[in-house]
Length: 320
Image (cartoon, rainbow, N blue to C red; front, side, top):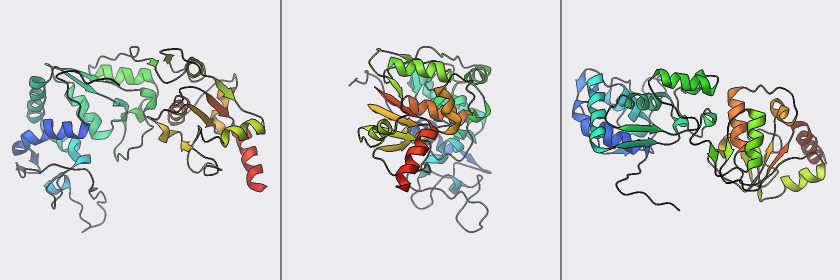
């Protein structure tokens, strides 16, 4: 286990936005035609705000109303509308907030940058305008589009087709991008890293060269041994995959994001069977990113079953 360095604060994104960008400046917050309408009593992380604006009388408030952001009963701000509240303020407000954090911090690090979407992403881009603080956003482009969150807004990554395009987009906003420093993985084996490099064209390196293999399963006996082994996590495209609930230790490609397992078995879908051959690989961004996540969850072995072999095995099992 590591230790937190002296004079370092670790805080969630939500608490950072509230306590450093919203709470100190509530008297100057403009909502609609009014300024300083409220003094909140904290953050509401459990009550979902009403989003359905098509049903009159259901409790939805427009963006120019304070209760769009503030729960009228608890007097707490909705956690998932903090960034929207900040982004809706005028330039002098934002400049004042940026200058304030520059006075208190020398460095600001934000992890999992690829998961920030909509107003959260816009807020982070606004913070890059700060001149007296070094701001670092750390993320993995190839894990974007694959998220457990339920953000209603769009993601900037859906509008770019490659890492190069995303780098250009950020550089156009005067953000310096480093694509090499964090390329090494402490989770994946050298074999997995080489496979991902060669098949998906995604640069990744093994940090310590620990043991592990990438193994294709084609015989029913081998497939059965792995699928029924509770120590091996089975990763399937989604819960609608035939046989999803038949085997122990099963998860979805996207939902495995952030997890680490000893061994995994990735059940391929027809569009990804191509990684087992020498043919040209062209995958849609969501499929590519989800497959990358699935392949990089294991510290040791990655077993692969192509869609035809899996379908044959499961059909025989169900029809027996």
